[in-house]
Amino acid sequence: MIHELSHVIDVVSRLRGIWHKQYGENASLHMSEVKAYQLQMSWGDIYIESNPVYLNHLNKVNSNNWQF
Image (tube, rainbow, N blue to C red; front, side):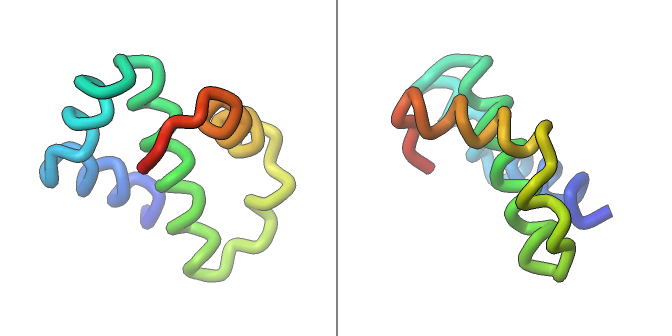
């Protein structure tokens, strides 16, 4: 639930739109996912660090040097 709440926050706060304008739709998706997974980890979900879906999103963000 925390993960999905993070996506709502990204839309309501307009962060998703800012990322979309700055980097494109694909980037905004990856950035929102990374942020959501990291929030989930901050609430104690230690298994996310090795989740291949999270790692794929994180790799896309890092390899393209997209900044939050």
